Picture 1 (cartoon, rainbow, N blue to C red):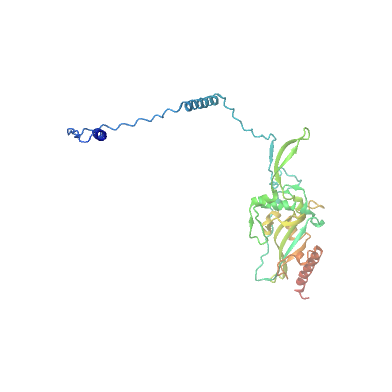
Picture 2: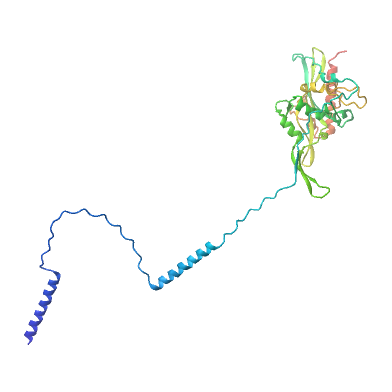
Length: 369
């Protein structure tokens, strides 16, 4: 029995092995295909777009609900009315009128269309100054420069600040100087050596100052009636009452006399510096250039209108009062007498009188009696 069981088990194992070999195709001949000419390959087809795999049932419902909510929100935004554009506030328009009054303080003198005098004065416009006597440098034996100041507040110098007017315009001496620059082609300079000329615009800006806006009140209804743009001068013409003179004293040995020749004239104005009024020089004018203008303008005479002299005659005859402020003699530092006198104006006057006495004695000592 045991042998029969063993033989049966062996046969069963062999059957299983044969069956596995048959299934694997061991021993079969490969199929042969006839050799054919390779045909032209068709163009490769584009791969079809992949379709997403269907999601789960719960995820699809949530996604559809979210899309519907987004579409509803988009429709609500599109259906909402657009906000009205916000307009910028219009700038406030100043309805107050602005009036420009840029009349210069320097104006051409108005000439009378008729003779304003009982006598014929037409020849006064043709007056010319006398020529200076020629002085040779070789005959100049002694010379000295003197700086003086004329104060128009002194009684003898009141003609320098006379506020009247005639056919030559404003008769204040400062106005005469400014008109000579503007209308008589006299050149102004910035120093007493006449090295830095000023233009007419520079002089106009010095005299007129800058533009300023002033509110004109409405006295009837209150408020502001208008705005007026005018010049704001740095000083008034009445405040210019001091004039500085530079002159040279020459003793000519050929003529045996002492000559005094005015070289330049400068108006002095006042301005506030540190709460104090300080003088400053506006400009310098070369006196020989001014003689033609001075010869045509008369000086105010409070005693007799018919016996008036010209400004050229006034300076040549030295009919004015002045005090010395500087001298070129014994002045190696080239400073004013006020600095030498320790800022004492009284001592400056004394020192100026000493210079006058010294010059007088020098001229007298040249003669032998």
